[in-house]
Amino acid sequence: MNRTIASLALVVADYDEAIAFYVGTLGFSLLDDTPLGDGKRWVRVSPAGSGTALLLARADGPEQVAHIGNQTGGRVFLFLETDDFARDHAQFSARGVRFLEAPRHEAYGTVAVFEDLYGNRWDLIEPKRFG
Image (cartoon, rainbow, N blue to C red; front, top):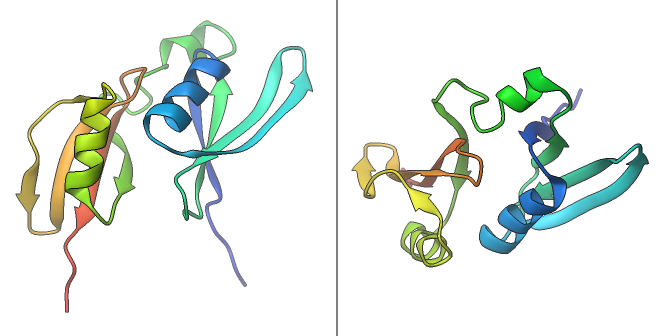
């Protein structure tokens, strides 16, 4: 049996502004942008080489709108692994990504928390290589 988590839904305010951030600012690839009718779209983005994608889901109704940018109650929500922390931290910073802390070195790797365009918290992390 083979199973994988292929996509995670991320509630967004607007498809196009979310695509601009994830593709234009973070450098993700746009995998799908398919109209579904009634203004809805199937939009998936993913870091290059990743097996997991974000399904950008436009908020529908007041309850979903209330959770834009706070899907996990203020905790770090997503973890973006990199093979070169310094490169990506510098690129993201130059593109206006808001880091909430200076890079720090932990037992598991180099990490810093940043916010996406809506305020969801992410870890940018270069895992420590063991062995």
